[in-house]
Image 1 (spheres, rainbow, N blue to C red):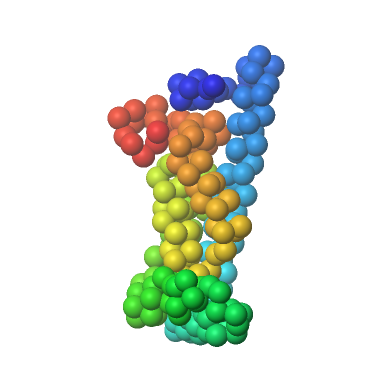
Image 2 (cartoon, one colour):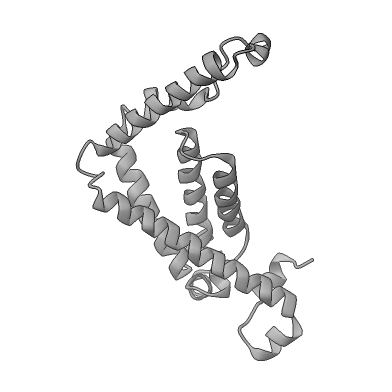
Length: 197
C-alpha cells in the first residue's frame, strides 16, 4: 500500500509512470475527479450568482418551498403510505424527514442571506482551489462542510450525498495539489504552513 511519503513523491516523468503504472493511473483518475468536483462547485457558484441569491430573498423562497415539500412527504408517509400502521405502530407519528424541517425552520430560513453569501463564496473558493490545486485539503474540508449543510436541509439523498462527501474526504486525505497544482510550489516556499500540505 502506498504511504503518504510515496504519494507525495509522485512525478510526471516517463520513467516514474512506467515504473509505477497502477499508482500513476490511480493518481490520474483522482485528478480527473478533482477537476470534475471543482467544476461542480464552480457551476453551483455561477447558478447562485445568476439567480441573484446574494441580493434578493430568492433563497428564502427556495428554503420555504423545500420545507413545504418535506412536510408534505412526512404527512404522506405517516398518514397515507403507512396505511396498515406497521411502521407507526413501532414509532407513532415518526416522520420520514425528522431533522431537516427543524434545520430549515430555525436556521436556514431565518438566516437565508448570510447562508447565501457563505455558500456562494464558499463554492467559488472550493472550485478555484480544486481547479488550481491550491490549498486543496483545506478547501476540500470547506466543501464537506457545505455538503453536510445541503444534506441537513434535505437537498441530498444518500445516493447523491455519499459520493460527493467521499470525494471531499478523499481530497482532504490525499496530496493531489502536489501531483498537479500550486500546492507543491507553495509548500516548497512555505514548508511549515499547513495550507499547502
